[in-house]
Length: 193
Image (cartoon, rainbow, N blue to C red; front, side, top):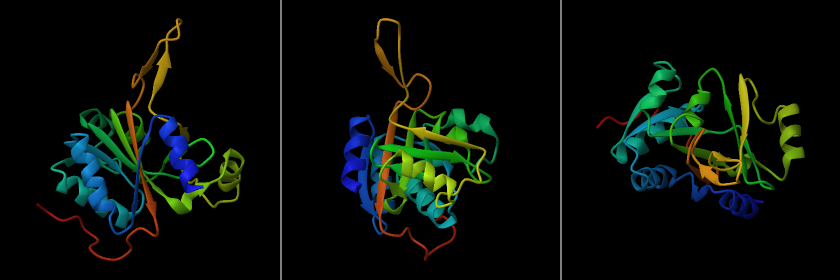
């Protein structure tokens, strides 16, 4: 299922970066440096994961412009990247399921030109039927105001069928596919530079 998700997500135009919990921060910092990210909207529900993300952003020479929807949606337009966790992911289509909630902004995965999504391998389901079942039975947390299934970068086509990427949302989507549990120990506050 992991290989199928990675293959399908790549086919859909997303860059998939396989990592594990021990190397997530280093791998994320590398992706941010390569994408030349200097300002990020960080919207992550899990506090320990948010610390890993903020530290990776700092290590890459960037800074958060908004974290977990503080400062209002206007800050999102100053971000060159949105970094989010996800509700889940679908192997069959290579899709990620994003949502907004009390500590997460829907704008972080829609407004900035680059979206980096952190997907735990344990969040993968085989197909859309399993995704909807995971939402219905509570395996995927849905205390959210919006849920969106994302299958690649934003795309649109004109009447002649000319495809344009990144018009109504991110032109690049990076998926950090994390095997194993995410860090649950260590610092609970981001490092300061």
